[in-house]
Amino acid sequence: MPTYLVIATPVAAHLHELSEMLDGDLIDSMEPFGEEMAQALRQARVEPEGDAVWEEVCFCPTPLAQERAAVLDRYFDDIRTTEVSRHEGWRRIESLPKLF
Image 1 (cartoon, rainbow, N blue to C red):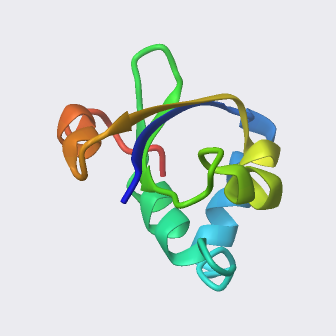
Image 2: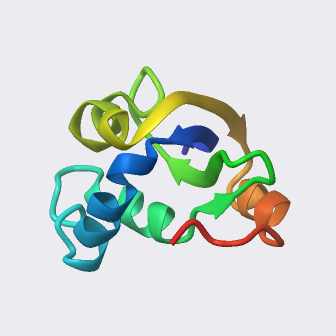
């Protein structure tokens, strides 16, 4: 299954709204990607430069296409993906502070 390390610049003005959506489980119910994306965002980390980073599984031909259209493009700018082995991304970023 395709797994990606995602690096994106948070839109500061909207992060509180995203946090509330995660707390209220509003993203979890989005089909077919909601549970995976919500879990990933809850564990997202912050790089020293301020970018958010997380690992996410995605089955779209274009990485995160559905996720971007439904959620990510409102809360993040400059979204970049790099294919990684499952859990490799989390190992790379585990020492960073959490985004939420």
